[in-house]
Image 1 (cartoon, one colour):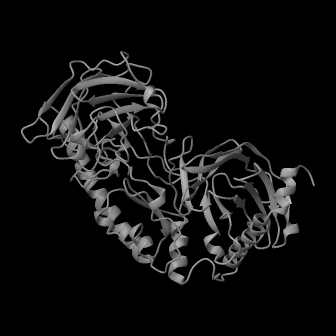
Image 2 (cartoon, rainbow, N blue to C red):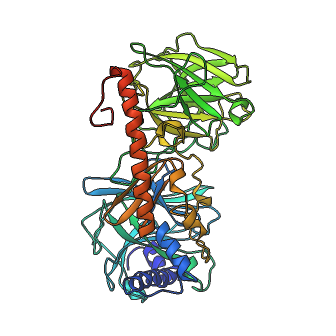
Image 3 (cartoon, helix red, strand yellow):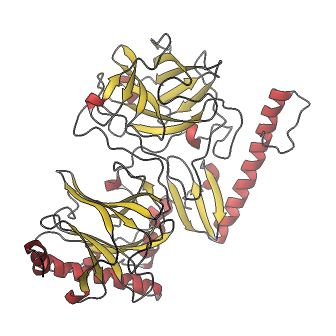
Length: 529
């Protein structure tokens, strides 16, 4: 039977529970294909519909090295990043307090049809390492060690906060090949150490449809390792797989004397101002509004190649100091002063309204990660509450894409200051998956689904609405992405909202075009391009 660890894997009771739990999850999928409703996945049709809707979203990952995530169960998350060639990197994270971090964790792929088999990766968090299995039924003999699919770089990490199983998998092997850029049936199960029965197994196993082509945004990073100091956490935008994060080429006007444009980084309490590029110079100001959390501690903006913290430059106001830093890691010691970036004549000042403003000038092109005068830049930001030294920012951080040329309005930005778009409203940085609305709480209330989807008044939401293959998407910033079945009324409202926004956009761009090229000139396309 193999080594002692393998023998124990078969003999200990959690494995029997694994067989039954995964079999129950497979039965759920099979029932779904047949149009049936399993009592294990919900107590009513509304709950099932809500979970079905929630299963069609992905979120930015907060796990180092990954871009996208999906809540499987409260405290249990699946992470991935876009496939490279025919290989995809995945991780299962079990947070302490969820129950999943105490025993084994299993993640299965498939079946694609009723009666199929599931390729399963099992991590024995207490004993054996990560191993591959195929499960074909509800008998213990049908849980088989498998070589039909390969995993690489498999690790199992335990800390006081969480357990993480990381591995890579090829898309084309196994009894249930993965669709690396499409929808997959995912089954999962975990053991709570000491549990004697498999009652209420919907709370110990489940299934989810996951689109591994869904991109949660640029690679995220963890905050500084176990420290009360440092770091700029940079979660990223939530967008459909087929759509890149939209560019912003209209910017709201700045209210700060001497500056032209502005970007609200945190609901208007922390604001970036700049004036049009003069040659290669960009004059900037960070404003912490009077009475805001940002005004009580350090604050900063920075830039990187992908919106992540590692390998980024930052301008940090700390106490009475305003200086440039290079961040080359995730610990406080990795936030290093640099002379590669000149800030011109930096200064700190108070406005008549009591806001604290940090003024400085950047030269486009300097340093190892140059800013671009025209074109998108990944701008990261963070601030601390009450800590004047460079300290831990908590959830007060994010990133935003900015085109400093700011010429024309695109679909993601309202000229009437309605918010939205990567410039005026950055992505939500309070993406704590433990409290996310996507967690699977077996209740009958479908308010979570309504709150994240078409229950919203779309005429008041910033973002882009579009239809594709019978499915409606909402692309917004700060609210994530909702993907849902498109009822007729929703399609009607979307069409009206699109027409209204297009008319406003074209009128605005014509106005800007005439200002640039003269009052008699008109851009026939109506879009200023």
